[in-house]
Length: 210
Image (tube, rainbow, N blue to C red; front, top):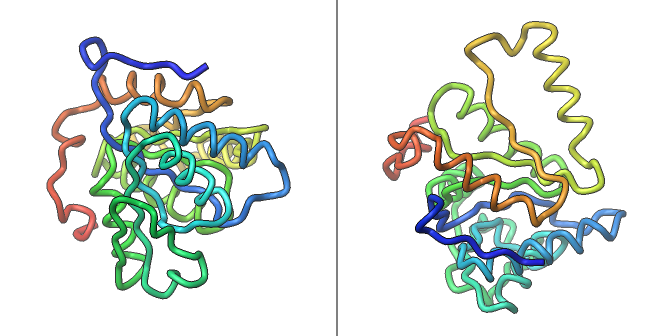
């Protein structure tokens, strides 16, 4: 069941950046989860920021937001407009010169980040945000949508790094997880309510300096 959250009781999240695959994956639960999360975003008035494509999980989450009356900002590099079939239905389509500009724009447009299942591109975008957070450059919440345990190998790797002291005390980063899409927004709202305000309201251009 979709839940609505009052901004009077919890810090409002205006936009969420979703990293996810440009393919559907082999497990149909991933597409179902992407579509369900899109509806949750629309029902709660949270704008989707995503990679701009119309295929795979990217297309599923964005199409669901739009079909349920929500707002979408798609951000896609020029060279991927044809390969990932840019979704022209979105209210705001930003075409960048390269991948770095895309990631910078996604960072600056979003209040929080969610990683649905995906491939190397999804992993790279996610890890960059985790690295920036680890280095104290932002405190925007980062959550893994652990649908059918998809992110368990990564979580185990991070724990392995901690045990071997490559992630040392003082360099830890809070990685949120949710096993169902219904749990995502409540966890993000709690996290953003306790984050340092100065790191949530970073000025435009901050990402370009990292």
